[in-house]
Image 1 (cartoon, rainbow, N blue to C red):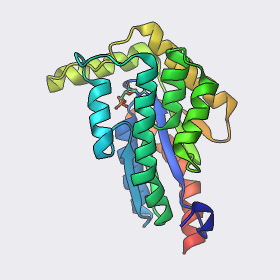
Image 2 (tube, helix red, strand yellow):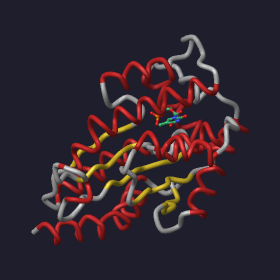
Image 3 (cartoon, helix red, strand yellow):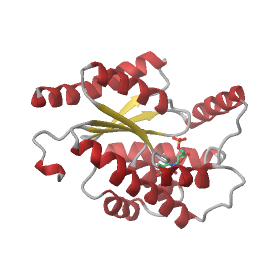
Image 4 (cartoon, rainbow, N blue to C red):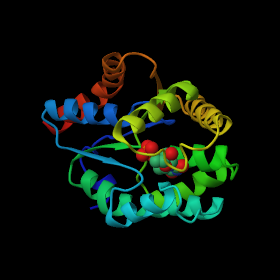
Length: 225
Ligand code: TMP
């Protein structure tokens, strides 16, 4: 069934931001809260949510793997996304499920388009092609000063006895570009992309995230009741 044929299309919500902003934790909390409204929710993430995506994630993020060039890197993220949309996101939406995704198309526009210099508009075009008619209704940008985010990542990885991954190891200037790139995306699309200050304590960030998502979720619930 095509998405436009569904009576009320479930919201597709994405969380975005640089390294160490707390996206994964906030995504889990948001999924739990949305389920608390009685909604069926698919919580997912990029890269790596499909079998193909897990291999792509390994290729892309494991330090020591043969480094993809900038164009290959972009195409690998897009391959992950196309598969993710086709196998997970579109079927969930068509089945009436809310989808809440940790990273999506904006990440490629910012990391590859902006910080790697491939061109935001160019990447947007490729994203549209890879995603078909699926596009987020709401994107919550968790904004944090990159030095702070990277310190959080190093601390967490140290505690878990893990090393940082290939993109986390990029210099501070790269991560400043990422932060500014996301803020520019939000300024260009204020209706879709909402910014939350991720330097607040975790519970306050969660409240701010919920305040943005709740109206959309409740409206969907009302339409399908
Ligand atoms: P994660 O740390 O949120 O799991 O994401 C893995 C890395 O992949 C992170 O450094 C951001 C990067 N990334 C891109 O560069 N482009 C993309 O399109 C996506 C989805 C992630």
